[in-house]
Length: 301
Image (cartoon, rainbow, N blue to C red; front, top):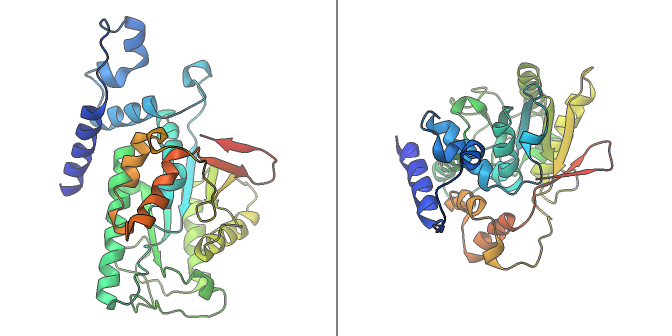
């Protein structure tokens, strides 16, 4: 119920902030192109999806292309918030097109330093909740999210040690409410769980961090997924994104995407100070760019 109230408040504040045009009533063509504004038969979830898509910056007109079979899109987020920073417009657009979007969170981002283990665990749960709320606004359900709960800031340790203990939560295995409860922190088991999810979801496209991202958790996530997919006979299209080390245009705050900015602001746990907040809000001022693996093209949203 708390998450529903937050989502409702989000849309109410956004609608109130929109300028009110002084124009004549919308034409029938306008109404057909904007069912989220004028159709009473759309569900709340469909209205949210349609509204986000209408205001998102998109270079493609979905009505100008032929309908395709729905695709399954899987996004790997090393930490809760990566999926919004890299892919929120992409998520909204793909849902609008009728595709299925699933998100796999490798860690809970619970690496809170110099606190008791219980506090770090609470911090991780808060970050999960922030992602649940933000993705719900986009139109995703709880069943679309998979939290693996492996140790934050220590994925590289898995490459060197058979067993790992989180230096923040003190845990050596995943939580009872993770996608795979009570899994020991071992590289082989993380690979196994990711492989099981990919086999279940059968994605057509996979979005992963870049192997040149500056954060070790991002690079290890990319390496693990690449290794798993390389062994598959049927390989999905792979797109890489950068969070740590991404460059931003020198733009005024007014030029930022207001809806993406509001989504980013759900992640209050990351606003440790003004510098942290401003670094996250920069993602609302740039396109979502992806490098397709094996091709010299960049896909932008």
